[in-house]
Image: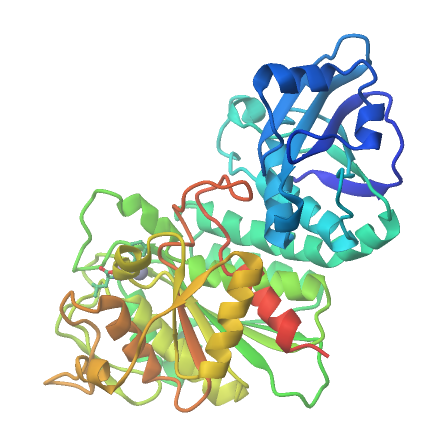
Length: 497
Ligand code: BES
Ligand code: MN
Ligand code: ZN
């Protein structure tokens, strides 16, 4: 786990030293407690010079303010008070990080003129600070913190607010979620030479410390189960496949579990249908779905969610090799359905076919939601703003869309249906894994649909959101950890208690 700032909560006082962060309301108005930190009006003078107006998530900092013992006094804007929702507070928290470059000892005066933020607002702010502080720089051997606009990773941040006990309690849950997001980011950012299939399994086993039950199925066991689709993808790599089952039993013993399934291709070269060289390095992130499921299990166990949850990830490497599968090969999936492999680069659906079937057969879950960096076509359709949502169940889809709105991990529902399903019929087998370019994300979803029977199911195509999304206040990193917040919220709002 990456180092991250440690955050504590306290009553509002006037700090004596270190760095001070205050919140400026719309128009650049400061609260009383903020004013008390700035008796000479240095910050206000700076606001005037910079024409700083406290707009949402903008910052201004004054270093070594004359006549004080502070290292800096900085402001972050809260913008219009009526627009201050959870997402806004997280953005404000994330934005404040850029004004605290290298600060070690930070006091946040959490008071806003003209507004009365709740304990949840304080928690959302702190959550944003943690997410916004994350950088993946472990391989930079020269002065790690030098080129990142973030507080020192060992920073101590004290958030001074009206009700520190309530804020601490509210943050208790979100801190576990933040740690889940950071874990997912780490997994996505880690290069494939370091994070192979077995190393991924080691990471998953670490969840046992949180009380998650972990099983790791080997190649031999998968052979026995008849997982010919997943194994076909893996056969070109010297690194053996693993299917991992994570279980968090926080609900009533008799409650049917809910299930999350992730695509974990630690590297996707395309196989024999090899990808072009340009941008191929991004395919180290083709395990973003598996990373999100792992991060989610971490979050749920970390906050002791009252739900029975199964996480299953299929972890393989798609490589080019004398033993790699060929276009034209026909494989038999665990379901018994046969698949003609038209394109070895459409490998994610092969992995998920067996993972979904296994999940459904063994756990009979209330629903299955799978996450996968499945198609380039979803990036063409939705860019990095929304992940694609495909579902056979309107109720589940609505709940997911709602969780997307609350967490700003947005979804856009795409169609599925029998007309699209026909497109994946094959002359030589029950289905084929690739069709033409048209409706590429939908035909991929139709493929998965053939492995879920009537279980309520949703497929999230996160190829555009899991990695390479533009930086934001809450994410400066290539790997975003997309999906952890979204699904934690889905569970919290609908499947606990
Ligand atoms: N992992 C890729 C999809 C992808 C592309 C993820 C870009 C993230 C960024 C997937 O395995 C793939 O190669 N899909 C093919 C499917 C095609 C061969 C039917 C694609 O999208 O081109
Ligand atoms: Mn591929
Ligand atoms: Zn892939």
